[in-house]
Image (tube, rainbow, N blue to C red; front, top):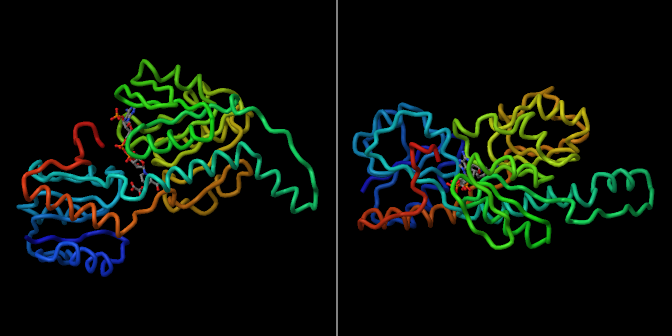
Length: 306
Ligand code: NDP
Ligand code: OXD
């Protein structure tokens, strides 16, 4: 069995070493143009030329959860696409979102300023019931985030394409449930995949439907947010702030207004990083399952876009 590795901006050697240890019978090599075709591929943002040279590829394993970059390419329908299924990302996402939420709720930015000014000043704390958190996307990552936020006793709403039932979470679904979901939420978290339906979904209309003094946490994909609409609603006072991990253009360009906006906190697409050890173990187990004709979790449905 020949396995090839083609991951832009990823140091290949440690991956190759771990993959060879996990799959000792396989011939595993780094892809280069003109390399021999493979049976399985481990990829992140590969070029089109990679798939053009794979006549026998059974499956491509994406070393991330989001497959938007992959789905922009022309890939034979005979190749199964498999995304990472948690692999250590869900706990990171839960801690990132809880940190952003609690930093906002407990007014940590104000205490930072007080410390700098040498001021001892206890602020009142708003009842949690006034900070309902709405999570868009209740998949592998969104469900973990929803359950974790609920552990802090915030009211939690969730929205997904298909109906769900999650303890401690008021679940809404589909277009019919969207406006009611927004109206019931003051904090909006996106954990939706980037698809044609979610492109520009976080815009003036949707943000305006949130409770006043709303807060946005976008950890999904930058293309979901209409950036100027967020800035306008921060100016109007409807939005109290935002924590953004993902952007339309990454790295966020120098001089972009988000860099210096006092109500926006940014991080460089780091909310949930790929953990090599857990990812290699998951991919090796899935290759073994596919080889013995068993089903695997995390298959991408190309018609849905995720
Ligand atoms: P999943 O595919 O497991 O979950 C996606 C969820 O979104 C599902 O609940 C799905 O609904 C819902 N959904 C999709 N389309 C729609 C729609 N049009 N309307 C309503 N709900 C919709 O993905 P993950 O949870 O694993 O990952 C989510 C995203 O997080 C990734 O696609 C990626 O973009 C982002 N990500 C960001 C990272 C970062 O560091 N910032 C790291 C990792 C991922 P249903 O359940 O009904 O199918
Ligand atoms: C992912 C990401 O999709 O890192 O895994 O954004």
